[in-house]
Length: 216
Image 1 (cartoon, rainbow, N blue to C red):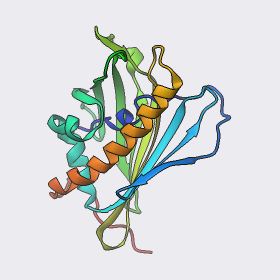
Image 2: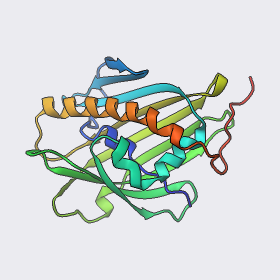
Image 3: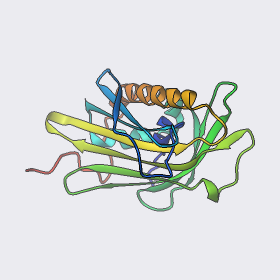
Image 4: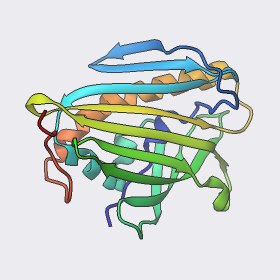
């Protein structure tokens, strides 16, 4: 079975799911190297983050990169390592991701379930949910909570793919909001910039993936 990483939560390692549905409008954080990052402030004072980039790539490159567990620290900001706990079902994986941190912030980890699918229009979607409460904690790491995100890859004309991400997670522990929000936004931007450099390294076709958008 393909090994899909739930690294994308790592992009927003310090963002948080609000208990209330009342949130602010999206605000632009920064646009750099074709990457656009936005955020909205939740009633907790923390952020939900979304990002997007357009680049020339095949759809399979994204999945191949996710499968390459050895390189996660080369492009996912703050990622240390990952372990695949279960990949028994097609298009589905349970993943344990570890994140490094600088003192005085403690290291974080999370356990997540990812499922991907592709629709008739060629759009590739990945959904991630939290399984942290189902697995024992690890000494030296603070277990993240309320992990939730999605990715969407939409094929466009001339080999261009629109890659979109939106995610949130509770980092747990006692962290000042201004540090949490600053780290989240910076990590998201840096990861998307590195993503553009990594995808060309995976040109091979991916089994069962349609590389073309549906005709209008």
